[in-house]
Length: 158
Image (cartoon, rainbow, N blue to C red; front, side):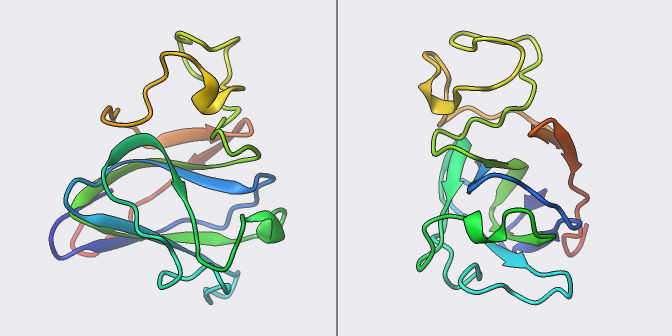
């Protein structure tokens, strides 16, 4: 998803996850990204609102999304929810929900890399040599718990 000064939104299809921590791969630069969680009817689930989301700024392949009033997403685990991303002046490449604070996706890492112990990301930010800020890779697919989540953009004006 790309968004300019005017901003844009992207709403996912219904997803179910087993993790606790939402992460994004995004190049936000001078803008910001906020996320909210919606129930099956499209209503915001408190406290996971855009207003309670701590804005993300900057570039990183593993940026943690947090909300004031919530430790993590555990109360939503196993429930069908949608995520709505509100982005201004930036690019969102991928998102995933991890069971660990490290951001380990448990998804496939293609050709591997330094610090990975196998074909899947089991270590997150603990992998030596893994870059988590200032590097970005275009992509529209993120494997989370070996389930592929393909996000289709519903950004205004796109």
